[in-house]
Image (cartoon, rainbow, N blue to C red; front, side, top):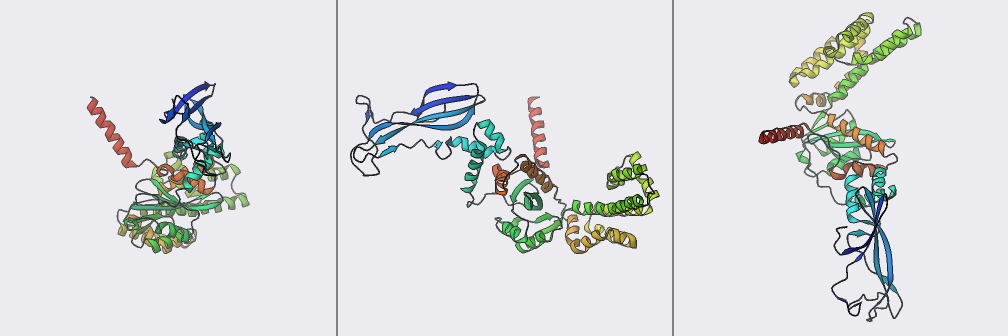
Length: 427
């Protein structure tokens, strides 16, 4: 019934939500049936007497096993005890290797918990398996503590993604494999020393050709020191986001000015506030009514219209097909800026002065950090669902079972091709 070699079932008690199975070990081959005793017995570890030890009752041990038929399983394991005839010291026989005495569970129970802990919370696993949540937490902790000195065998990515996520009151660095859409590692902080140490530990790091990141100086320092042959590409969405922020400062200033001077009705100010997302959207993607609204705002507030047109022109830089064309578009955009708009887009000008090489590297290597941002979302969900996790616990969860993974476009195409081939064969 349990499919464990060396045990046979004595009795089974079934309740509404559990199986209680009493087992004992099978009689060994050297069992003397006529005399009903062992020909060979254990040797006393106290006095090392050569006299055979005598039986001294049995001890009932309780172990948890994987559920069956939707019910939890408890195994009552009868273990034989012996006593020395000379010194009186008692001894209990060892349980089978399929049982873990420290956690009072079976080894397949531990394997199941470690495998499933990546996608489920400890509380959910504890409810399904009929144990306390602390037991699940300690099993996962012991498993990873025993393997922390063993290097993880993981394919070295060609395109590396570096970003950060706010977890447990601190910013944590996240390293991903962009092409495989897989989490590679999570670091306790995003300091340059910590990132450099992690990048230095990557095997065959010379295979890394491209590193995508946001405009954070510590990442740039770490990559330059540890991966001198890799090309740094600044994520274009971070640049675009900052362009939208610069334009939005004009909208906020107009709204605050008219609120102070009471030149706009409250409802009109709310419409301008709630409609800011229309300004963020590209002009060619606006619906006809939304486009009319934006045009009306740009006409009513000339400064806002100028900032909106400057934002649109900056976005057009990323429509360039080559690096040379993108640099030309940026220089033209820079010359078209009025002194007032130079103040508005001062943040963009600073970024372009400090990170121009890395920003324009995007037009030679078309990679973004979208995969890393998506994996950050998975990490946040796991942290929110299991409130109270320590960072190491969360890291173990996310790296377990080959880490968190997104479905790549290549995998979707392969799956669709496989389904089409199966359909053709069946037809």
